[in-house]
Length: 207
Image (tube, rainbow, N blue to C red; front, side, top):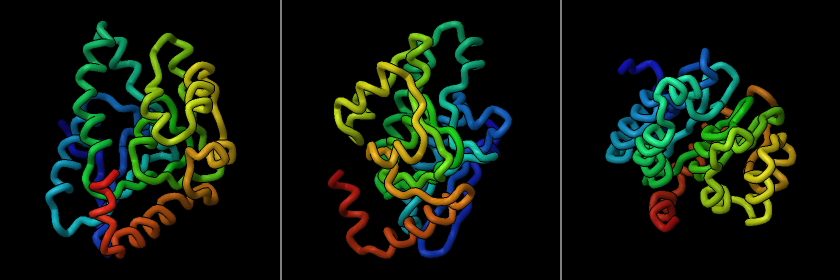
């Protein structure tokens, strides 16, 4: 596996930025990238110098979901999704505060990735949705319902419609709205604020 599909940058105040780095594929989550996330988050979880993590996507897109080319080549989508279970557990159960910095699209599995973070900072032109349901690929409605109300989760998962950042904020999907291009800076500042809170780590273990 090549390490460059997930770039790691250490900032001050105990903040680490992870960048999904497959811009040519809109940062689609292939097996390699998912495994890199599993491995790197495991390392950061036991690194006492790391207090909070920011997750962003390269090239103006947060994440376009699972890699459809990989799914097509695999021939058995169920096998690929089964392999992804470890990845979902690694992100959702990460023991330190995790902030998503969202530019562009966060759709399908990319929206799920944002939902698995504790907080979401989004550019005002970001988009969200579960369009894969239109291709008979189920959406993670249980995950979505941990962030928004049941009726909203059903709406998004039944229709597959795309919502803009403004609506996403009103629905509770987004915690902070910023100007396009400013999500990473804002997310790092938020992560620094979280890292400075002595009780943040303990609070994360309560979630």
